[in-house]
Length: 137
Image: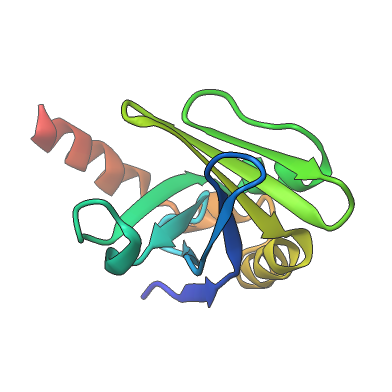
């Protein structure tokens, strides 16, 4: 049975610098997908009224707290000593969010308490993953 950690975090959506909008998305970690974390935006703040979740590598979040990290749709980098910026790239544009680094770090530590770095493979069901991929073909 998987275990899930969910933490609501404070964020600032950078709309047009220096304008910002306060948001309270959630960070989610599920041991069923031990390599990933999700940034979940509640329905009331999404454009279509549906919850929106961005999943990306837990390692990316960890690396982004120390220095610029990410390729593709998600980029994470420190912004001074107390803030971390997460950029989400989509066809509609780019969302730039600023988080307190301490909140992201605390969430990450909780995920590593649940599944230590390097131990993720023991939780992966590769046979089921391959079967699911083949069913989709």
